[in-house]
Length: 318
Length: 318
Image (tube, rainbow over all chains, first blue to last red; front, top):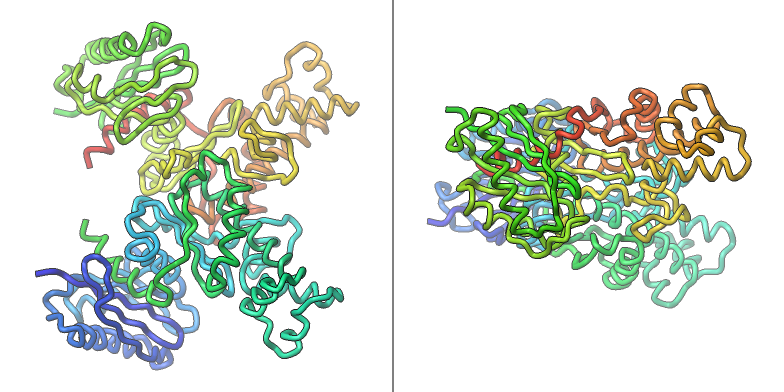
């Protein structure tokens, strides 16, 4: 009988649970409130309960569930399967694996939420069948996930894939990490909005004055203005895609991945983002390292986390 | 009975053969001329003959040899064990693995010479016991080898580890790769000599005018001048170590290795290189990614290639 796997993507407000088959195909999913404030014990009990509920919903007997993976936002001891401390959920020092394995009788693996989303795209999203990948998530920040030979790279302190903090401008804007000029200060949604606001404040002519006054300055209105050849909007997008192209050029001579998968809110701009991104990469990358390399939009959207979480336990079987 | 492994480091002028035990300890070695111009058939026959000779020299019966690895300079089809074309040796399209497996009756694995040297250091040199490493070789160029979880990273077109071609100065000096401002243009021996010559040509006062006139400008005389507080020499070393520190800062948020192993001719400068290098890394790296990360001198010198070549076949057994 075919096995199936459950993945949980735990966020500050909701937990998303998905059940997938051996090929990473999503069979069914469920979303429940996180209620982090009720404490970890209650939270884990609810995760176990909802996992069983999901298996039942999808018509899978529990005996067919071969593993449960969880993507968590925060600091983890991945080897031991423990939460050290989470972002936006007040749980500390929680032995997730031990507790859930006892409750559910299946292997439990945890990992960082950004890593897990990358693994989802690699397993059954845009990266299906490609072993070496870097996922780039363009949202409030610039996140990443590095996959070598189908496996997530964690690094010595779990900082692998923190590619948003590669320095692009020596005396650039201050980043949340305390350094200056990180990719994130230029190419995240926040970074692009900063550049727009600077331009508007400097008295630049732009279609973006109006959305700015209406509190509607976001990447959607930015790309819409660029569509109408707004010079400021085009400049900001050009600067962001230039930084991202240089970032990918760097990654191409480190791990030389076969594909970059670009996701996150900003990636919804589609070809208005991907066309200049491909041009910038072609311009900056070493030709021998860039040959045949694909730059692909992420495919799984919000499902990537739970699918990748499920993948954590599939990989462990080898 | 314990197994042993043979590694061959093939260069333009000589082939170095080493026999190692299961822990990567070098039992014996042999160096023979390459004689590339005699053709691949003769060359491979001689490699096989010398491999048997080495086993005999070291008192190991051939039955105990569990594998043979070869590090080769040039373009390879690693999966198929074939040479596509080599640098400084006129061999093209040579099915090395097939030929040598038939001659020797042991598994044969080939890989790129830079990768193989990195694997040697990782296995039984400075990186012994550390799974995630980046090796940086400072010589005529700046080379590298990336190791994740004890395995070499190759990438889609074998360009993983070409970290010398990460851009550090947007409008910097022209690099051999065709791009501008690569790490290699600043931090290789060639790059440092370029900076010294520029300084001397601009009329800078320096102890280096004399070695320059005597044709003795090299990294040894450069570091000796720095030792005497020569301002130009100190500036050039500062610029090189600044670029290398920034390079390592980048690598720390890509794969987040536990150690950087720095080798190659320039690394013979010892603490005069490593002290500013560690300072620069501490300055540029994200603290969370740099915590506990070691910057170590390579230990195996010219033996790294043959030891790493031998390691290629050890790893394949898992």
